[in-house]
Length: 315
Image (cartoon, rainbow, N blue to C red; front, side):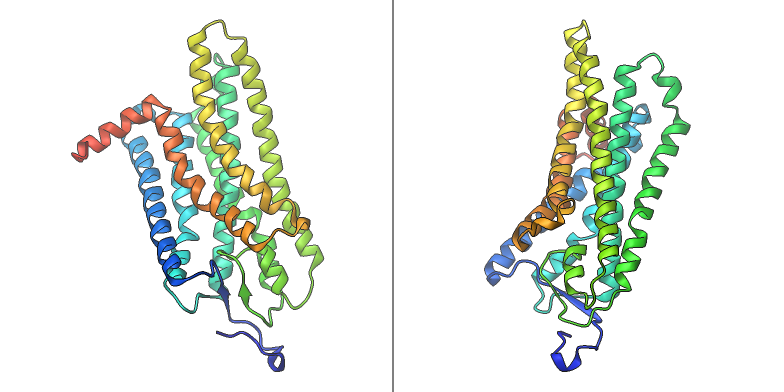
């Protein structure tokens, strides 16, 4: 399994071992079944929302275009890590190639970054719709909506490109065991044969900027929304605004809460167990709950889902 011995300390690592959850075989099978069900439900739920929004032309408006992109992103986000986790549950070796590890690292972080930007844009959209309702149609045009979505995807895939390339160029000469469920910068920095404080600082600085920057933007947007909602004379209007924003805030809380535990406090020395649980939370739990949070609180999405599922004679 390519775990280097001292006599071969300069034989560079060609593969890593993703240790994952070290437990009895029966528990491994139980976790495999649980993760498989979670993955299937996540793909089905988010896929149903994407398909429903695509088929219903009445929902081809900015708010639902953002939501459709968000659900589409979640499908790929969860697919960047979970399939390998499932394979490792049934494997004795639990290996991942050097290139495969950094590809997983790149796509997992890029999709996560795109999600941070997209959540911020969704908050901005709600701010415009509630605080500037008369100007909203003129500001949030189809052209601007497309441009904002494109920026989220492009910036997400460029944000961590340089740090990941720099980390991949670091010498890894053994050991090659990553005590985690995914290829993550923390364990990779630990396994490197030479320290790289500048690269490490760059990585955590970019993580902090994208997480805290977008979170503060979302917080500011919803503070202004809350103030505007409280000034509404109609109780019905307030209820509808709170319902719309409540779904988004629930998703933001789930996603950013676990992210902040992991990537903006590298000096706290989190245990391997806490790192794995936190990673599973934002990599699997949040994508699973997002379709439920959005669809159960939105009449338009529920109607679109009924229409699509009805065409397939599912309901």
